[in-house]
Amino acid sequence: MPSLDVRREMLVAMTDPARLRPAEVGDLPFIFRQERGYMETIEPEALPGWLAALDRNLELWISCLPHTVFCVDADGQPLGFAMWLPGGDAATLVSIQVLASHRRQGLGRVLLEEFEQQASLGGAGAVKLGVHGTNPARLLYEVTGYDAAGREGDYLLFSKTLGVASAS
Image (cartoon, rainbow, N blue to C red; front, side):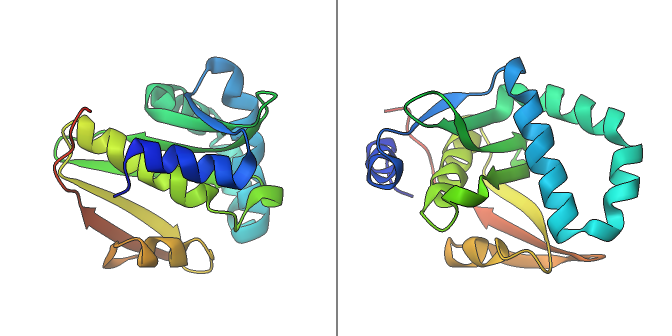
């Protein structure tokens, strides 16, 4: 996994001068808009159920704020985020979103690698995630070393063993 300095250089090359920062309560509307956009685009048949469970989704997003990293542009406007749940030896990626206008520029990879780094620093030896089978993001997981770990309904499950992280 590239070092934090390499990831920062990747950010500068993509969206100078983008930066990573921890999530804040004020980010919840952005999270909602991105998640809703995902549901409308990738899983439109599940949107009514998702909307019916919005209170539970909001509770999840709030509980994940300490484990959410945002990428913002020079003006502080959000470009994307990665959100996860720690879970003992394995952290679970809950969501990773990038604005449509900033996709295919490496930002998803930077956010994914930051998730992995933070999970490792938090004591996780592995990370896992599920991705809808029609979501093009599944290709990112495949090329970044994630192994197929099964299927749950329409979701492909992936996992990855992490190396030992250093706090440097």
